[in-house]
Amino acid sequence: MKLRALLGAAAVFLGFALMSGCSVGIDVETLLRPPRPAGEQQQIQKALEKYILSEQKKQVADTLGGYILKYPRFGDHRSAFVLQDLNGDGVDEAIVFYSFGKENSNVRLNLLKKNDGMWESVSDIEGASPDIDRVEFGDLNGDGLYEIITGWNVDNVNNRLLVLYNIRTGALNEWYRDVYSEFIIGGLTNSGWDDLLILLSDKAENISTARLLHSDKGSGEVLRESGEVRLDGYIQQFSSAAVAELTDTAKGVFVDGVRSSGGMVTELIYWDGSFLRAPFYDRLKNRNDLTFREAALPSMDINGDGQIEWPIIKAVLGYKDYETDRIWLTKWYGWDIKAEKVKEVFSCIINMTDGYYFETDNDWDSLFTLSYDRQTRALTFYTLDNGKTGEKFLTLRAVYKTEEGESGLEQAGFRLLEDLSEVKFYTWFSDKKPFNLNLERVSYRFAYIR
Image 1 (cartoon, rainbow, N blue to C red):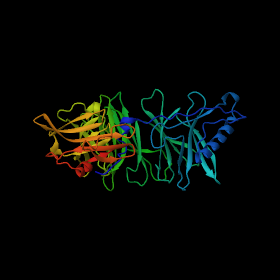
Image 2: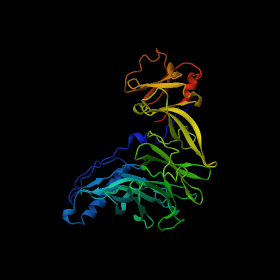
Image 3: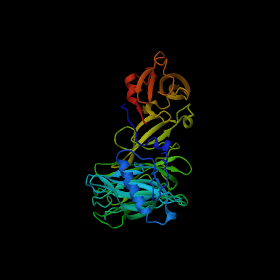
Image 4: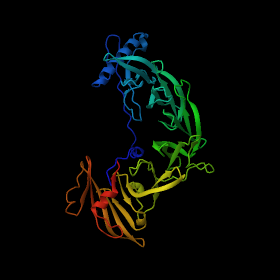
């Protein structure tokens, strides 16, 4: 099977690292600054410092202090300097996140534009808290201007605060705010411009909701709610949200939810032209049992067909260390929107420790068992006959280039399967029936996932 990188799989297991800022002093005579970046960011930082110095000269002496570059924790934009064409003229504007060097000072947003080859600050606004969670961009009213969608962590609040800014006047203006657990920007209503989907989890009341917000073309009015739908009420945290095509004319959002009692579900939310729908939610039970699995395995486009699938875990007879090894037999399912029913896509053994899967056939079920050697990173398949472990017929082994363990593999009958930048995968196999493996079949069934 072709090598595929599966975007978002590792996000459940690895988290994003928070990048810290650098604090230094500023006074009227001397401008000290955080370590200066190179290239375009260097010029942007110079323009920011010019603005900060001019503003602080206006303040009384005891307000003078340093500034700290601030970094969004999550999302696609995790730099203090974000370049984005906000007005569609083909030239990037810059937004810099920073705060003054006072304790618990709120993050500020500074908008800079390039005029005659020189960057200059044109607008500055105080954000909602000292801790920015993420920043996204989208045209939410079809006027050709990107809104700036920011998420903020707020003390003593279970959920986060969403704040939207627009630049209709050429300056940063707050346009809308709301609370959220997760938000998604995308064209979900076929209007030709972006929509905002807000997911909210009320842990105290066991209520989770999705709200779709939309604006009329060119409207400067506040976003209006187009629809609301309930989700699994026991979701504690959302993750792995992705917009995916359901048909040629319809898009939906797949999002995973971690339950407070453990385990994970996948929800699908989409606009059917009249109503917002969440087909996996069981209203009578206030939960989604259809996609529930005990392990925190994320939904993803597992087979590269452009659709999002979710896993259901199946037991492998004779193998009990799946949680420790992070290796599972999984059946992957998708949603047939026209038939409004679940469809099985394929089965595989997924190894999240070494980052790959191996496709299996349904008629293999109950005919094999597994073992995993953590020291050698070797996953071995054995035949199973009436519950008894038999001969091995397949071994998959990961050899990281920073580790030893490659010598002697070829002499032991191993064949090179994949040679990647950081890791090599080797395989040993037999033609034991009914598995009938050869190098071509093993290669077809194997896929690297991170």
